[in-house]
Image 1 (cartoon, rainbow, N blue to C red):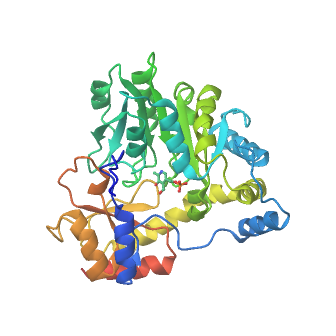
Image 2 (image 1 turned 120 degrees about the horizontal axis):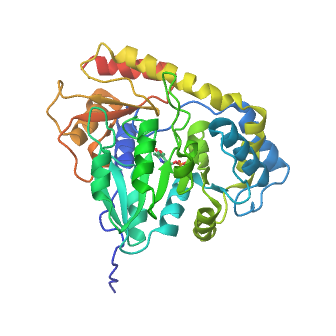
Image 3 (image 1 turned 60 degrees about the vertical axis):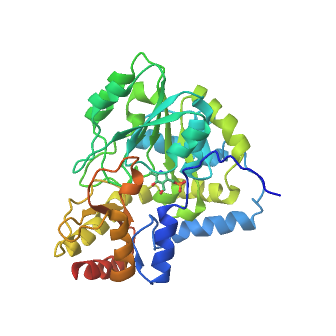
Length: 383
Ligand SMILES: Cc1ncc(COP(=O)(O)O)c(C=O)c1O
């Protein structure tokens, strides 16, 4: 018997992260490909998970997240962005930022709607738009700045535009939005029903004394936005897949309608541990920009003797490098060659574009031990 399956996502295949990850393992390459730290989370945080498991906190949490964590998040949002939010009606804890992004999109995008995304774009947005019957409208961010061309956004907006998806600090380019960008966006969406989805998982990874321009800093934008964060990035625990979404009560209510049938809840002892740690150790996230800036500077210093060209990244734990003086290979082949032949895994940037410009960039992740970064840069400098 053969069964016909009409794939709802016919374009989706194996992600580049899996391909490069497997290649890196096969060739024992230093993996600066996928974005995850190779160092541990703070021990005090790990101990709290242990503690809560032993205390028997192993059953379902409340659907919106455990109360102590939502309270801790509300306090943090007040401290960081000077915004009062209700932990009851405006905070939802989710299994990873990914689930919050998925729920925000599927709860509000309906068939025929258009959603503006900026390429290169993180790969989870478009499948969620397609599963909702919507259409992603891809606008390019062009090198070397990778900034948003607001005139192009204005030209793309029409009565079918339901949502604009922002990501700052931006994966994979490291670009960040400015206060002027937020004002330009506000002007375009004023007096429309356009919603915003702001992926801010790298909120604390902004360097050189700059401020993260969260949509939560802007009253008009926050009033129409799902703003999504990830504990994985902030506490070096990407494998815990725990994140959260801040949104006005009416949007939160819609997001929760989907969240409760996708996963219902995030993991209980992890939420309790994060709540304790946020309360006891707020300095962790305050120190994060310095912690990662050191790693960025170390990697860039070590790479300064190489033939790669780059500007130190403004945000995230990713460094884009231009290899046009080294090779004519397309970036996918280049990333595979670096992994296989040179022992350092990288991610090609074209995979984040619908229509890739003809550029030669790969992305390295510097969320690694200093020795790992030094060793990787040494190999890359030999090219
Ligand atoms: C831009 C961006 N958004 C969302 C995520 C997903 O975060 P989480 O692991 O919390 O689901 C990532 C992870 O790499 C990311 O880079």
